Image (tube, rainbow, N blue to C red; front, side, top):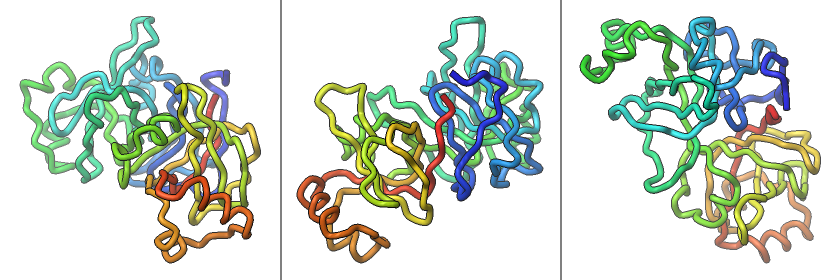
Length: 269
């Protein structure tokens, strides 16, 4: 496991606002404004969720990306991310300032990936700056405490969740982590599913990025899940499949879920 203060690297074409994070890790980087894209050159720390909740004052002003389960929703604007380190850490309050509504999958323990700036909560200032309407009675306990102001939020299920229950995730913004199982072309590979008995590996098609992934490498991909319909994929995407790969995909994945990724990042393990 990587030491919490170890510097990590990423592939060169990051998706704006969605930085890779695995399990309960956070990637922190200095940022002038919450909306800036954080590059690998700016990344400076890899810290745990426990460190964020227990010592977040030291991260104020930095952009972080973290992945964890939602413990509780406060209202339509914010929720608590679970800290299960069991060493006195507190849950992390996330305020959605992305401008997009975020809906959890009902009846599921799916994790989410959040990217945003750590700021000290001042209710009046947040309402003015982000156009929010925060109920003082709900946020009184968090006033003047560090919170994550999210510029992007994505569901973060396991590969097997997507292949076994794809209808729950189609056409939603997703960040998913897994191990590269089989590389079919420079832009196409499968992520291995090890957690769910009977589930299938997830086919990933990258667009706009050409990741130098290797078999067995742990990666996180960001994008959208779609059912494979040959006519639609041939028209909408730049496919680099040779005849054998095309025939394999048509035989194995027709009408099955395919993850169309616009970002691929090495996982911090």
